[in-house]
Length: 488
Image (tube, rainbow, N blue to C red; front, side, top):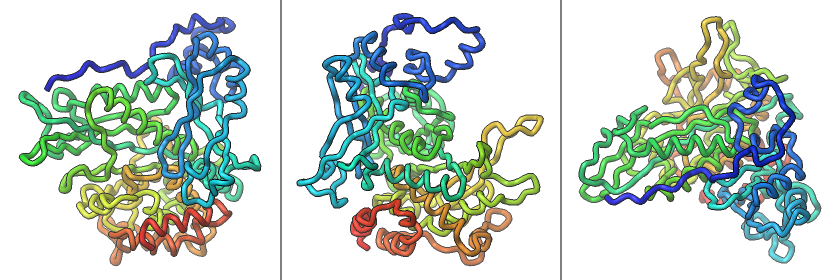
């Protein structure tokens, strides 16, 4: 197959020295401040939290910025964008600080926003700005929230929902919930003479020449780091689907695992990761799929999400020194066990979701949890430590049920609500004990089954509705629309 030359994944920007130099500081301090930072942080010469509209206006002038894009998540869970060609410094400053209006009845269809009163406002968050890695000319992108005509956060916005759930957990329990996702995806292209690619279901950690998507995955790591998405690592995954007589495409699976971030930022990072991967695949002339199953009988795309409850800046999601679970870990596991089936409404949203679960390829078999168990709904992964016992990364609680069809903002908001519901329940320890896997990974004597149809998910969501709706986080219209979609 004749391959098209691949474009660069990173916009060529003027060198940082074109900006006014920052005050001279010791080299060690400079390295500490810039190592691992995004391109924009290096150009502005300030940490994200300290950025002002004036900083970005100055940068735009010196880079001869041609476009500003306000990016935001719609009701369907897809990223949307509103583009501007700044007319001058005053116009750009207004866009950055005030935002712009949009049609809420189109962005959030079916949520009760009427066309005759549908204006909403996109509100940029300056700390999220990044240079568009896929733009030919220098262009700035900012993530936005949504406000209604009253100036308050828009209840129908997924961004509002996940931020409200995160803040409720902090306010009522004093817990700051962090998360990160394992973004699994398939890359596909037509088979060609001379292919030396992999072996069916044997792609885990494979490297070139046995995977053709290695360079694309590595480009994704570089592009994500440049736009400010914190990363853990990337690798080839298990799935490899060879071409058949009836289907000339070969598919190989890869994974980009993100780093822990507060719940709202973790949801944004998941969507940005998919955005970057889709754009790189388009440039490379290959297909990129996050579908739960690309071909029945083969490994599917999960979206395993790790959670780290934090209190006073300290992670408290693992086992204590005596081997027991702390309260926060107990509440989170209990919430996921109790309401995991209902959360499938936001985490397993297409027919292929049930195909993936029925195949049983490292997917949950029932509503169970256990240490290290990849067949459980919830597991406690191994914590890697240094010789002196220091954890290399915080202990996490992994939710293995969601897949590539998930709506990240609604799913993570639902997990926070389930966390609080378990904290307020009568006996979360009993819930955890009933679902605990036995030694050797064996299931409990009578494990609760997972839903196998959309109608079963709808029944679970209806039963969990009081817990998930607590605090007014999820609008009632969203429940009604979701139940209708599921056939409930």
